[in-house]
Length: 392
Image (tube, rainbow, N blue to C red; front, side, top):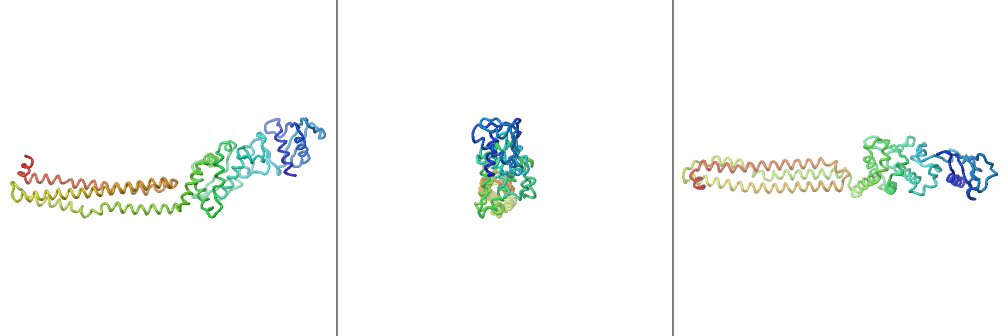
């Protein structure tokens, strides 16, 4: 009987015309038998409906009658609001829906929730979302209508939204958010992923506008969750990924240092060769023994310089390949693990800095090997006749 009385009250309310917007007193025209039966049932249960007739006798009820009436349902029975904003302002209505309510300006009721695209349907969907987030957050403060997350301390997201927010959000995206968390053994991990995604999305917003911002950006939240879930599904956690990148960093640092360590013995020959040039060349005015010695030393310098430069070119190519591989690994990380890639940029910057340092060292060594020019200068000074003959 209670449901039948409620259906009758909503029927009367939808045909009711308020004297003033939002008032529960106005006129009602009995146009058919259904109207008459609904009105009689409401009047017969005044303790629930609070319906009263004004200026007409109960016996005068008939099809065609124009009645002035009012209704004020018992608070424990149903709620009545002039518009959706007033309904949302009533205690607790943003986080739960009352079993029965009427919204006068749109002539809608809790029975219209089955129409998801309607204002009431959207309201029910948001309440369903809040209840889904209740399992994701640390807890839901029902008195304050506040979702509390634990993220480096307490993080509050007051459940604050208005009618305009209900009209603006993407229905399909918000509906998808209500069913993100599975009920199987992965529930705990998925809840943690969604909790982190929610906090990251709304952290920069003022507390009072965080929930409405989330509604408007439901697609961004679902995308962030999907990325996090893909990482989890692939068997990666942030800590594991960080360990993997750190292991790669150590490996690449070793390879970068090996670029120079592989040729350090050959590099030690540079000062030795310099000493030889400085001590073995003698003054040779003619084409005698000293001329042969000086020419042999200069030829040795050429051979040494060519071999060393070839060795340096080889190491520079190796270093270039390493730099390209580091860049490729960085791009792959940013593509596959975008949500956490920024936290690992320091590792790649360190590798790029070390590679640049080794590159500069190789350039400096190039300059030292270019000291072959000094050998020619010494040969020209100490073997003037031979030098003059070469350039004659």
